[in-house]
Length: 259
Image (cartoon, rainbow, N blue to C red):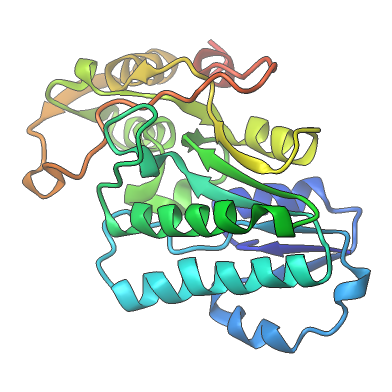
């Protein structure tokens, strides 16, 4: 039996698809606290914790703490008590505009830092715990995320709908470590690393400009430039790059778009 939280989310759904032949207990955030009545922990072989409020612009501290911090700690305590391996989603947002220094720029990122610190403080109590600081995840099935979708999907939708995609001015200077969701699922489920918190990205950043050009080429669209939004000033990661921790052939955006 495997427990998956956040199974209705973009990444959670991919785990669910991969584990379709397994017995899975699905937990979404709206019923996460009712899950406290679950009493078959002795049958659980793995916990995959993906559930969270992932909106980086959310300012509801009570909700973020409730779902992202308190529930994560409670779930980890069950993993410790019943000695169940647990693999959970952290985020590269903990680094802010740095590559390896903890410097969160928003409340979502702060919640991930808190959970990571708690895991590090208790790591010797787990049978196995792996936290994965996901970098900029993209792939099929994220269209519902709208503004929170990756630029790969967002630009694709814009071009298909209007024939043009919108790029912030200066997008050649905004570089992110984009990783395909299928690679995420494969690595999380099939690695033999010990307990720890790991960067999960390609270690090969790509500019928003290049992503836009690739999508425009794929769908024969044009690029329109727009001013950088004021509400994102100081809260926007201009550069992300994962540490090289995986011997893995990552999918490139060009390969994903089949160019």
